[in-house]
Image 1 (cartoon, one colour):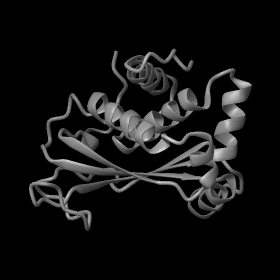
Image 2 (image 1 turned 90 degrees about the vertical axis):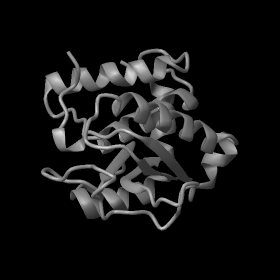
Image 3 (image 1 turned 90 degrees about the horizontal axis):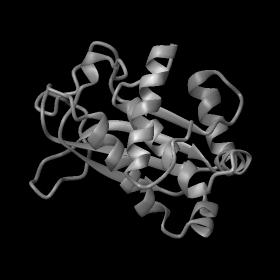
Image 4 (image 1 turned 45 degrees about the horizontal axis):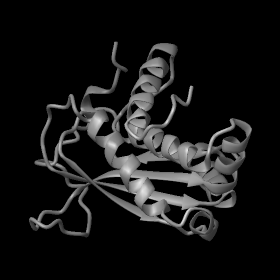
Length: 188
């Protein structure tokens, strides 16, 4: 059974993935981190949005590779939790809004090759120290764990959630499917 999603978050189309790396330790540890993140985010978008029916178009996803202090500040400000966490997802769409490029006013300043402004799907922020510590504790490479966190965050932007056991199991299956495309083991 597929994961339940908010129906208003169904999308189809192409994802443009922007990767910002304000924490230089990501680049020191993984020189190809931008390409790795784009690949993982694009695959998550492709699989996570494949059942969508509300419109086609170009969507923009922003990934920010920060450090624990940066993520902790965001978590404190926006979630009321004064602690670093591995990944935060800030979607631009709320319950009741259709994620449809034909009608969306949430547009990027950037233009696509076709002269279209992509719909801003949202931002995913990942904390360096937390991700590295988790990868080590779980016996995973940082590359594998980072891919998992990116996929997890993008699925949240697409409306997937894990608030109850049914949703969590469905989301985990999708994550495992995406990671399997890269030869990575099921993270669960």
